[in-house]
Image 1: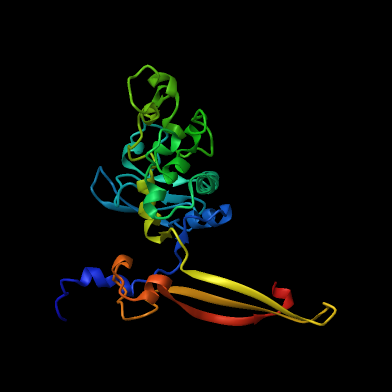
Image 2: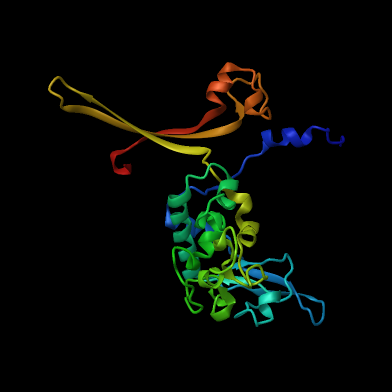
Length: 288
């Protein structure tokens, strides 16, 4: 086997295709729920801190496992910041939490989207409002502290509420007298960032390689009919095509890794990447 070429990192993308990616601009709550639920695991591998042995435990079917560490030191989920498991263990998101997270992601899409890239989805905005506190995904996770809400530690839908009770939560009133250029950024849980506190970084470890800001595969349906001189429909037909955008350009005189700004072909500057028809079929009336 030959050695990799110096420019290999530039050309590898021409061969990269993603199967089953998820569009972060989706406004379907059910789609978001299915996507998050699909990240579930049947088991958890962790290290026993007392013995140093690697152990394995099962994960309930209705929970989604999220861990800050590749090899956590516990398979338990902490109850609050005073629980050692909150510093060693994992998070097991419940169906209620997944449902709320999906609804809040859709709300963020409608309020901040469409997202033009993943950076726009993940990073905070340079603004003096709630969008300047954190990105859309973290805002969806910590939904209970935005829009004027006050977190309730016992709320079954709250993901990080267990770390927001009492003095754990720094309210806007507590920072009102502080001389800060952007006071909203100083609010939130004082325990934000501990292993048991779910952050967007933890979630992105599970879903980061499956999300995209746009679709590359499209299902297109078309309809046509024939009418007589009186406008009566004499015949009609429906068809469906699946079309996929591929890495190569329409005019292959430009190779796939060339940036748009450096294209030499007028055709490619105008039309971009090639679209391939993957399938085509005629539809019957009962499929519409």
